[in-house]
Length: 155
Image (cartoon, rainbow, N blue to C red; front, side, top):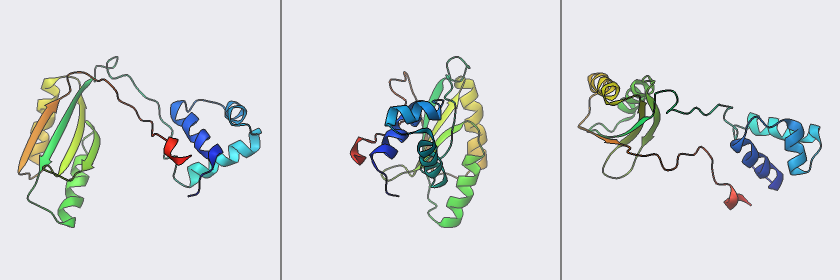
């Protein structure tokens, strides 16, 4: 999709604060309301804007333990990957799931309330999957965690 400077400005504003009104967005990018609204609709329909969400504070919700789980497998075929993906995505504790290059095949970010909750997840996870190795790393402190994509390279 070809994005111009105004599209990029809109995306940058929306990824920082989705609650901005169309009037406010239009004012900030120098458009009137209707053309601004049409641009946002086009960005949504094209899939550039994947959804609108609220970002929650895990610490206030007693869900602030992040565990990065590295997974190795001896299975490297499409059928296994599809089944494994479906299984992993079925765990609500999994906030991120990536196929990797390097020493480990997959990386999961699991968010739980405490170590006991992770242990419960781990037992269910290894029971539901067939893996060669699973390594868990607990985040000691969250220094930066952003959903924003740097758009400066698109200008």
